[in-house]
Amino acid sequence: MSPPPLQPLTNVRENLLAQSHKLPNLPDLFLTALSICFLFTFSTKSHITTILSSRCPFLSFPINRRRFLKIPAMFHSASNHKNQSLPSRHNFASPQSLSEWLNPRLPSDSFASWGVKPGTKNVHNLWIELSEGETSLADSTPPVRTVQVITVRVIGKDGKFLIESHQELSDGNVRKRGRPLSEKMKPHEDPESAAIRGIREELGSVVIGSEGDFEMSDIVSIDPNSYEMKVEERNSDSYPGLPGCYVMHTLTARVDGLPDGDFCTDELDEYGNSDKKNVKDIAVSVKKHYWTWVSADSV
Image (cartoon, rainbow, N blue to C red):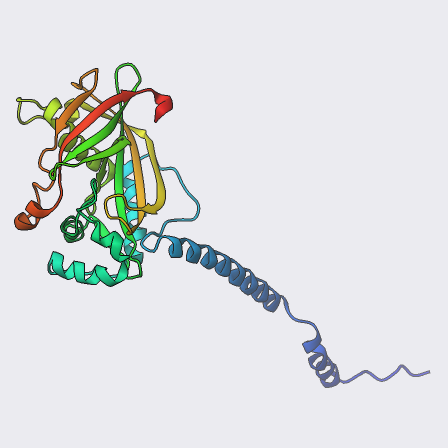
């Protein structure tokens, strides 16, 4: 009996090619899985980012919060993220041009109360903030004012915290506070530098006294591990009707030379470094700060 004839090699090759479309090869499967994973992840993160951006239009920060040992490094990282998402700033030539831009975007009764209602500021204050980069305004109705704020929790000898009870303003009105020392941050200013500046401006008349120039590092001790950051969304007390997005940076510090009981300090010229001399004379400024010590449970 003769053996069966061998199948030609060309026929085997043709059969394999004809069936090759039925089984996807490994690289194709890998690329398909990778694409699906990428699309799902990108879609989820984009959705979360969109929600955060819509609630606070000038703020952008990482979804996963991290702790950094160095405060300046943490702040500059967050600042770089924020600056990349900021739209171009509005350039208002004068307080009048700012007023004309705000008028159709705010409730008329609220806008009319600026600088009139006790404890509020006027459009000249907001114009100085914008001109010096302390504040950003979203082009929306109503606009959203975004501010970076440093809050300093000053600890006394007995473990109590210093609270500003109220302020005396240049127009003679009194504004209630009930919070620790707080300052709007300057552009590109890190939290520690802003804290030192705030202590000098608001407590300097008591701490410095008549001694004149000195090193703040000799009397101020800041705990770098106390740094915290959070975002608050609320209407502005200073500018009624204007929604605010406040990026709050908090530090704890000890300051030598403070009185043990309640005391009052003079503001060391709130707009002293401003070159808008004519405007600052019309703006509402802080003249005196009134301080009290409270227990840690009250903060």
